[in-house]
Image 1: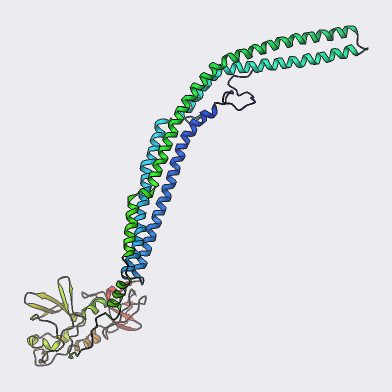
Image 2 (image 1 turned 90 degrees about the horizontal axis):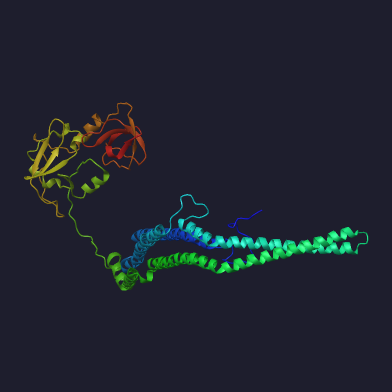
Length: 491
C-alpha cells in the first residue's frame, strides 16, 4: 500500500522541517484574524464596564443630592458635601468619554485593520482566511518534492530492515538443518540457498536505501531554502500584526489612562477648593441667623378690632384660604376678601338688590377691576346687581369710622345671611330621589351650614349637576348640602 506525500508520516522529532509540521505556522495566520475579534470583544466588555460604572456614579450622585436637599446638612458644609457628589457626576462624564474613545478610536481601527489584512473564506475548509489557505498552499508546494523523497527513504529503509530480518531467519534455519541429523542433504542444501538469496536481497535493499538517502540529502538545501522563503513571508505578515496590536494596546492605554486626562486634575482641584471653603464659623452664623437667636421677631402689638366682610367664594379650600388673606388675582378677575363693611356702607346707599330672592350659589361674590374702581357683582340668571366702589386700601389696624347700615332701598336694613335660610328651605330640601354615587378625592370641611363635610375616599350621592359657580348638590349620611364639584369623581 502506497502512502501519499501529503500525508503526515511518523516522525521521531517535532521539528518544523518534518512533513506537515508547517501547519502550526499556517494556523498562526488564522489565529491573528481571531485575535482581532477577541481584542474587539475585550474592548466592548470594558466599554460596558465603563458605562455601568458611570451610570452607577450618576445614580449615586442624584440619590444623595436629593437626600442632602431634605437632610440636616446646611450652609458651607452642604456645599462641600455637594462638591463630592459633583465629583461623581464629573467622573461619570469622564468614564463615558473613555467608553466613547475606546469604541470610536480603538475598536474602529482594529476592525478596519482586520478588514484590510484578512479575507474571510465563504466556505472555510480547515482555515478561516484566504491568507492562511495561501500560506498552506505555498508550504505544501515547497515541501512536496522533499516529502516524496522522504517517503521513498522510509520505504527503502523498511525494505532493507525487512531483508535483514529475513537473512537472519534463514541463517538460523540453515544452522538448525546442519545440526539436525534427521534432515537430509537436500534439505540442508535448500537452507543454504535461502541464506544466500536473503543475503543478496539484503545487499540490494541496502544499496537502494543508501541511494535514496543520498538523494534526499542532496535535496535538503533546496528544500530548506524553499521552506524558509515561505516561512519568512509568514513572519513578515505576523510582524505587521504584532506591531499593529502593540499600537492598538497603546491606544487602549491612552484612552484608559486617567492620570494624563486634564479633566481629572481639574475635578479634584475644584473638589479640594469646595471642601476647603467649608467654614464652621460661617455655618454657625447661618444657623443663628436663620434658626437661632439672630432671627427677627414680630413681637405682639396692639391691633384695633375691625369687622370683616364675609365672602362666599367657589373653588377649592386652598383658594378660600388664600382669599381670606387678601386680594387674589385670577385671570382678569380680582376677588376681594377681608373687606371692612363699615368703610363701604356709605357708598352702598343706592345699592338695592333683592337679596332675599338670591340663592346661595348666586351670592358667590365676584369682583372685577374696571377703570372706575372695583366692581362687585352678584350673579343671577335673570339679573345682575352692580355696585361701583372707589378703589382704596384695605382696612388698617386702626379701623374706620362707623357708617349707617346698608339699606335695601325701602328703609329697611338688609340681613346678609337671610337668604341662606330661604336657600336651605328651598333648594336643599331632600326630595328623596336617588342620586349618582361619587367618591371624594380630597378632604373638605364645609365653611357654611349648608355645605357638606367629607373625607378623602368617602362615597356619597350627587343629586344635581354642577352649576356655573362650580358647586353641586349632594346627600351624605342622610344630609343634603353643597360641595365643590372638583373635589369628587364619579364612581
